[in-house]
Length: 509
Image (cartoon, rainbow, N blue to C red):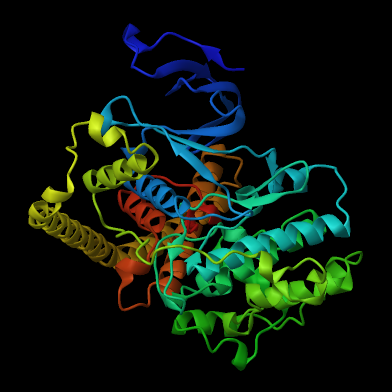
């Protein structure tokens, strides 16, 4: 439960009161009365609350120390900017962003959403039976919300059961837009982490430089399969294993199915896999509606160009009787929603402050921003243009510094490739000698046994790293394709620190 507490240092900010939930301090506007904490994640804590002015229940998400990680701050900014413009029954509504007491020196962000009962992940895990009507209605709402996003040229890029909120009346809303991106409507070059691995489309696993809205359709297919079977259809342990699981179900691809792969090594990898006829979806889900399986098969298509679109999926016979074309609103979303990925913290903070002012326009006056009369607007235009030019220059400088850092990091990695391969050979030699000693002493020596296990573990790790580096490193811009976690792992190894062999260390998120 929420417990009211005294403010830190005994200093109370005007218009704020203080509550403790799960050992976390909430400094929130007095019009909100917390009820209880309802969720916790890497971002922070979510609590249910009542807006005393409207008597409406809401969810308050506190994001702790948002600027400790620039990428997390950028994702928060992207979500704020997108949700301010999105208005749809099947997309979560952002109702408020609380103004911080410290003005522009804030560290925490409080977001106020409409309150939902649970998420689809919890429903799938629960013992509650799901009828065909449940499945049909959940899928319909997901597709309908996604059609709205795609009509606005927005890719969600992280659809999964945990990002689909549900009420007790089965209403469904898409949430978590931190990885969403504005798209040109065509396949385009985009980097950065996308989609939790189990719901990641083949074109992303194969490092294709261009992708489009079809990545979201694949994720919907994986979610629908999970609803049918009450477990993930492709629970891969790492990226290459994920591809193998997909091929095991869909069957071996022919030449026409892999023409979209623009990475030669990725194409060779797919061709090198052993032949498999695939597994019929009717065998995986014998109790499913045949029309549901037909639609699922059209969503889980390896080649993105042959995958069904969201609009086509809504017109599929399985959705018959649910779609009302006149009920879908046309999105009123501006075209300039994309954010420069290389902006620095001070620019992110300024842009986040501007998003807060959209919900609290009166705060611009109380924080010292002068009002402008109509007679003064013309005189201030040159100054406003100068500020815009200054910000653009700052963004360019930030982008250049970021590119230089990435390039230097990759150059260091390339230099370490030969060293790692050499170390690989040395470890193999030591391992063979250790085995000989182990046999000659008839090996009841626990120290030797431990040494062999550690050396074997390190050898396996190095082999896996070289394999993944060879697979993902063939690109004209390697610093744009090699994931940050992969780079961090390489840096870790090059310091000769001990590691444990685990395929999870070569993840892409």
